[in-house]
Length: 179
Image: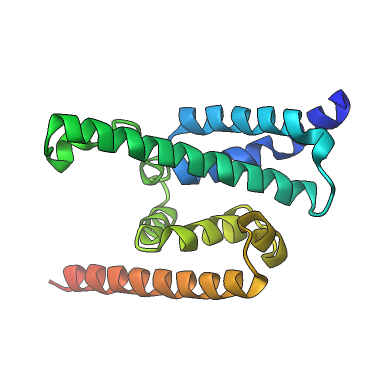
């Protein structure tokens, strides 16, 4: 079992880190959540039935760990904001660098990432799983617990949204350059 666990860790820990990083937007948190994923894997390894691939099983666990963390953070924020009263947007800003700050060296990647902010959370998850983590439609459906047609529809809408947003950005840049 130890060898199998180590193989799973070596094979998937970087991909799971990237997936969780895109969910939580904080390097240290993503690292902690990856460890939590592998703790869950260690405790539930014997119950893995093989109905899905190990890859989709791990991503599914990572998705649930990430969602649980986000929900917990939202509860904490509501609690603190309720105690402190209304705050301005600047007072609530997270000091950790955002992913778009990390990839700012590449303009095209930054624009795509910013464009993803206009997508719904479901659309962002599909974009990350399909295009960043290179999961198939079936694997993405298994991870998210959706039908393959829902993945395809969500992907289509996400790509369309990105194209619209990036097209708008490009037209605005062209107007500014023409002035």
